[in-house]
Amino acid sequence: MQRVNLDTHILFFIIENALKKRERDILISHDWCICPIVLWELAMLSDFGQIDFDFDAEDVRDLMNKIEVLPLDANVARQSRGLDISSDPADELIAATSVVHNIPLLTRDSRIRSSKMVPLA
Image (cartoon, rainbow, N blue to C red):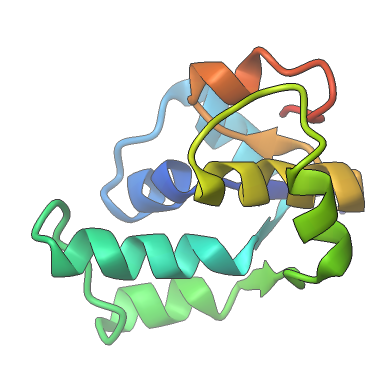
């Protein structure tokens, strides 16, 4: 099965059952992966009280066990500086992960969606 790279908001929308139909359809037919910075973003958003997210909740642990965490390596870091978009560093690393691994990114982010380089789901 092909993989799809999930941005932070998509992963949160999965947990909150707040996906759009198109997103659900894509997720059903793909294996899921993420950039490690997605985990950090979820932790930070939770710490700042912007989302209610508990890594220790059973449903979250079960979900995380199904998601491949791709490496955040020198290739991803280098690619993040060569994108055709400008965004916050976390989003640039997420987008660069899709470019380096040639895995479509599932995102609602309009800046990333405007890229000609980032493969999109």
